[in-house]
Image 1 (cartoon, rainbow, N blue to C red):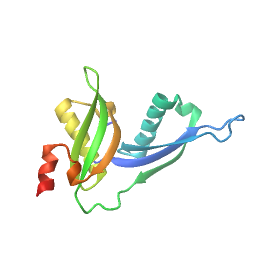
Image 2: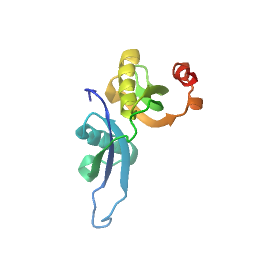
Image 3: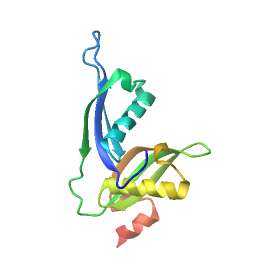
Image 4: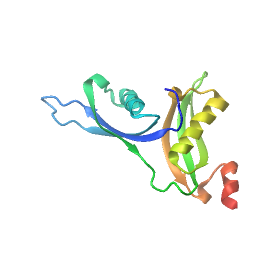
Length: 148
């Protein structure tokens, strides 16, 4: 996967295909950041293979919609927890960014990880994101804007 332009946020819902003994299997929902819906579906199946032992050939996508942020007029602080694979192993990391939208902060993350750590987009897994208040910031770079 290459990051061409801004990342987008997708909600992908999928499940194992129905069988005679289980006609209505459990559905799984994931929020995935990807440049387009095709890559979002591909990443969904990648994570389902890792976590639930379910492959694309034995499952089906029920829904794939883009999530658009409602209030994108004010600058917000975002905290992002991620895991990435480097040449020496797998690392967990926490980053903070300021942006108008969460997708803008994610795009900043991919650009910064490529520059500072030489990390490819395919080796980054976003674990969690959160909107942070001024008192919740941990890094001095973002805290300097909160004091102003």
